[in-house]
Length: 108
Image (cartoon, rainbow, N blue to C red; front, side, top):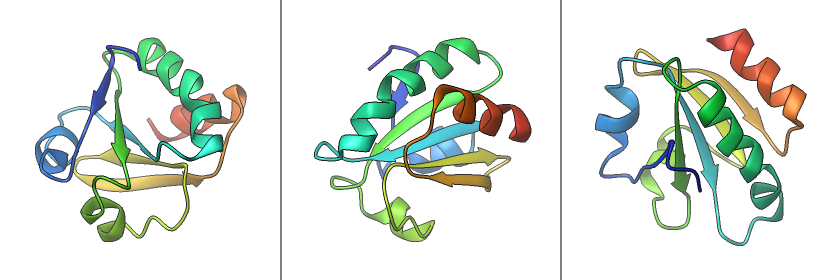
C-alpha cells in the first residue's frame, strides 16, 4: 500500500473521512477478496495522481464492521467518494483504470 493512502478504522473514520477538508475516496476491502487485490494498484496510483485534490483511504471490512454497515456496503470492493462529510458517489466491484479515473473525475 502506498504511503499516500490512509488506513482508516471505525475509530478514525469520523476524523479521517467525514471531517476531511478535501474529498476522500474510501476503498472498502478485505484480505480474502480477489477483486480487491486486483484493483489495489489502481487505488495506489490514484492516490498519487490526485494528491492534494483527493485523499484516498482503505478500510478493512472484516476488522471494521461499523462504517460499512452505516453506509450500506453490501459487496466488496466498494469505492465510495465522500465530500463535505457525505457520500456522494459509490461504485461496487472491480473497475478498470479508465473507469476509476472517470468515477473520480466525474465526482471531484
